[in-house]
Image (cartoon, rainbow, N blue to C red; front, side, top):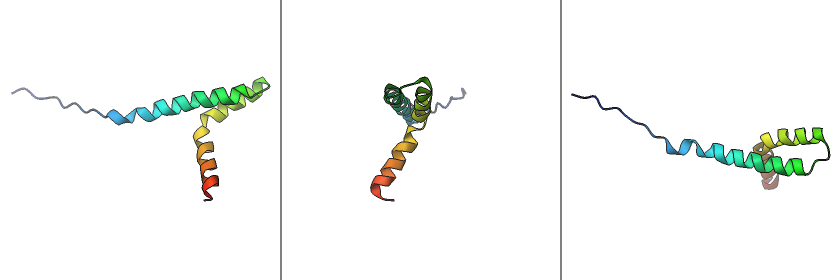
Length: 65
């Protein structure tokens, strides 16, 4: 009797990384385009890495929590 191999497929696990990466690219373009010097551009890239934190902060400030 042949033993059957079980194949597990988790379809929805990779999608959030794609959206985060697209958000990172958009935030990088936004922050870098508004800079005047090299170090401001570096700070812009660092801000682009943590853009979800800025989004949640502003959302909570808007809601009043």
